[in-house]
Image (cartoon, rainbow, N blue to C red; front, side, top):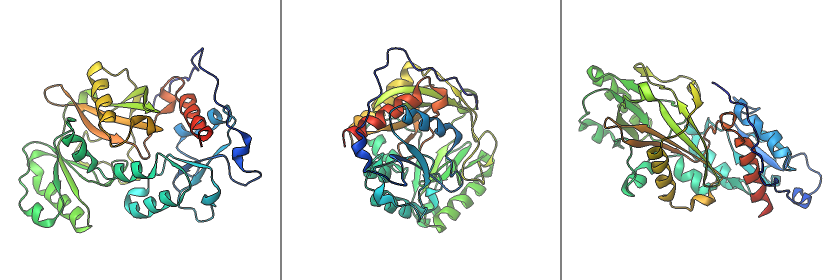
Length: 317
């Protein structure tokens, strides 16, 4: 991953200083917990820049593993969900944990809605152009499934980091069907999409927003350049670089955020991933509101912007 040097923009307003009374006196817990998973107990490396950025705002921030039973979550003033990338295999437990935390960002309703990719149906119904998707919820549907021609992508509707995601050549649809059937046997809803070949050249554009305002953007190289399972690990290795989004990519990202069931200003963070279809028009691939990588190191001042947004929210109670 290429990493840009972060330069704090001149003239930025001072970081809001929350009252120390909000800390609730001496505690073994910090002001802000950055939730992560047991594979990354110290956070993903890109996320660590948020700790000194929050310190500049007068806040102590530390990572904690979300399912660590030794953590006194009731005493944590604020939890910011970050690299909790093992949630997909036990989403119900993850959502129960989110609901038990006194205050979590993004909010529990947002996380519950966004951790199942069926949210794409809602956005498509609102007029957002998405990558064409066939949804399969039962084995009877799989038996009647007519697969489109060309290369396909098969994945479950609840997944993270390209887990259980595969690309299949047009001549290997039997393997694609077997993948669908396996996921259905596991009780998962399945997504079948045409492989968007423009990704091989242009990659994906991820547009990152903080407090509903555009922060920066990145280019992600193709994860599924070759047929087969994207990864057998918790997440796939990505080739990520900075990118200046085109105007039409900004337009679909803005429209997506405006189509949500919540005001975009309610979102501490968001990442909108878009690709170009065969006609060159941008399509929404995914909207990440739960635990997305925000690639803070690739946006000048991005860590400071996010830290300031967190501090403002703590100050607002």
